[in-house]
Length: 56
Image 1 (cartoon, one colour):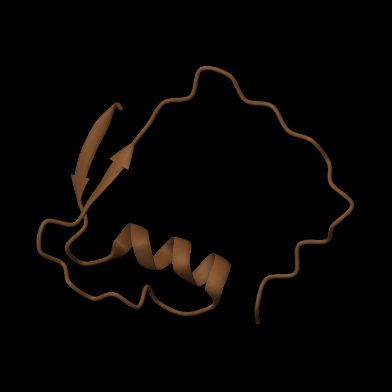
Image 2 (cartoon, rainbow, N blue to C red):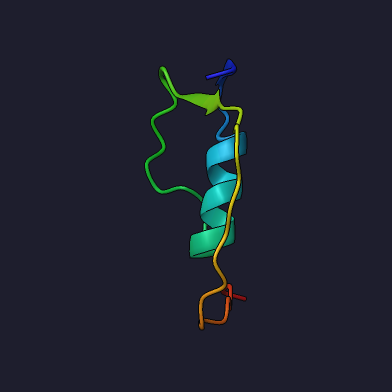
């Protein structure tokens, strides 16, 4: 872990939820909510035969 950031206003959670679910994060209890920032050492990927179609 590199850093802990408070996320009481859901800035990070809403961005992720909107990208993958098309709506804000549903559990709206901000007390103690944090975003953990991590640093990767190595990144790899595999191309899968699926097409990414995010909700409109």
